[in-house]
Each structure stands twice: as C-alpha cells, then as structure tokens.
Image (cartoon, rainbow, N blue to C red; front, side, top):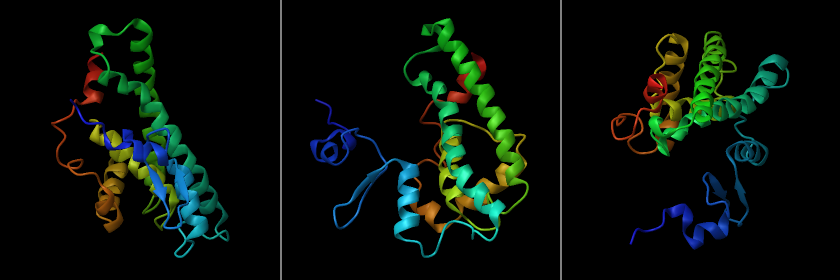
Length: 194
C-alpha cells in the first residue's frame, strides 16, 4: 500500500482542503495559501525590509506589482506541457497536441519579454530584489527543472545565475532541482519532438 503524499494527509487537508502548496501557517494559526497571496500578505504584515520599490520610483514600483502577476501568467502558459506526465505523445489527440504547440509558442513569447526586462536591471524590475523576483524566479526555475534551456536568452541566464546564489533562494530550493535533471522527463524536449 502506497502512503499518501504529505499534501494528501488528513492533517494537511485540514489546513488546506485543496491539498496544495504553498501554504503559510503563522504561529497564531493564521493560514494563507496561493503564492501571490502569500507574497502580498508577507509584504503587508512584515514590511521591513520592504520587497517593493519605493513609490517615489513610480515606474519600478508599477513594474514590480504588475510583473508579480505576469509571472503567474507565464506559469499558466506552460501548463499544457504538463500533459506529458499523463500521456505519451502517441496517446494524445490532435487537440491536446495543438494545445501543447500553443504553449511552446506562448512560453517562447514570454521568455522574449522577460529577456528584455532582464537586460535592463540587476533584478527583474529594478536594481533591488523585489516581490517581482519572488514571483518570477520560481517560475523560471521550475521550467528549467522541467527541461527548459535558456539558450538564446543570455540576460535570463545571467539573471538566473545571480538569483540562484541568493541565500533565500538556496534555502528554499527543493532538493535535487538544480543538478538532477535526469530523473524527470524533459518535457520541453518531448514538446519539440511533438
């Protein structure tokens, strides 16, 4: 008999009935799920140091708060490629294959946008690490874990290497993500073959 994953145990489901991570549980029992909501909550409840540019620099501030959400849109563009965990390409119907091809196009379009942004600053929305990085970096790291190569996106390569070395990023990285890319299928390679 296979044990339930940690997120499917009765104890976890009592905290988050969706059985999903991330989930933040405060010492006082306050619970909040969903990545973007957690980022906003932390910024509002623990504002020092702030992870948003000052409002005096209106464009950097506007970029940071907009790009927090755009990183989620980028992650959603990728989702159809996850079909490769459910089926082999030979088992997919034409509609599923078309959806994956659209996803590859959308990911490449988004990579071009993020490449341009990464060319302008040290971090994605400016010279300081912000909530935009907290939202965008996990997305790009996850896609790389799934097989995305950043060939042709030199600014994103430099950005990824720079952010990867931050203590907070090293501490939060799931074990095996950075170096062990052979244990999981390369979904981007499978999508290109499709």
